[in-house]
Image 1 (cartoon, one colour):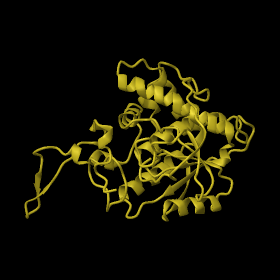
Image 2 (cartoon, rainbow, N blue to C red):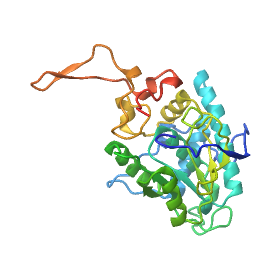
Image 3 (spheres, rainbow, N blue to C red):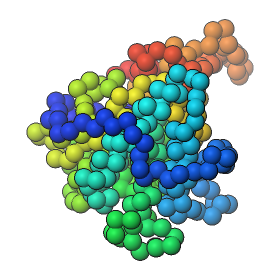
Image 4 (spheres, rainbow, N blue to C red):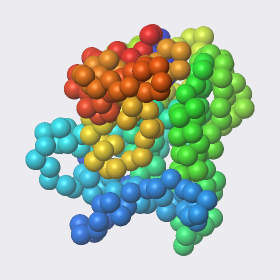
Length: 310
């Protein structure tokens, strides 16, 4: 998960490693155009779609992705990771009511993958147009996704703009906090006492991510909740393989050479993506601007955080 801090040592509760396709993903006609199912951020000119429609489209899109026979070993690996992640999300939906779940979302690439997979799993748990009152589990639906955004110091305006776009496009009920991580989650749980588990986009290569499992209770001294890590075993290239193959809109900073997003004071374009000999003169002073390749062109997982000061 981008721009996040782990709670340190972890008490493991369970680990789900199912390889079966999620039963909540709805079947899609094999002839359906994949690009036509791409979710577009809502705009003032377009009518806003309801949450059930958005989740159903994403469910169909992920199903089609899983059914595609790719020749690429990368995408075959992404399919395997996707099936496991969907199994983890299904397990969380079995353990908790939807109102007891939340998702930590800060606009980064990792939590964006997590958000898409979570939404794609939701149609059976949401009110449908034919039954607007009750979901498949017989419970009332709210039409919004519980979510929390712990902002960094000196946030990028591009990140905040992208988060705002996602709030509209994916019907997020997003609570923002600018305190340190622990204090922010304490405040969030005080403000939202029904939340018992929070989906987090941390990956094993993130700081403090090495020992995480799919389900981890927070440590002593932290506000108590279950941390759910569906994408913990995804690699950097897997994340970009998923986002690009499914044509998921992402923050514009990634096209400017940023590979891991923090704040404006400690985050820079990744030097591994610097284009050689492409400085261009700008202005009367002849100053040069360096150009960087997009984030998805980075090859080595170990280079992901080269643009971060910490």
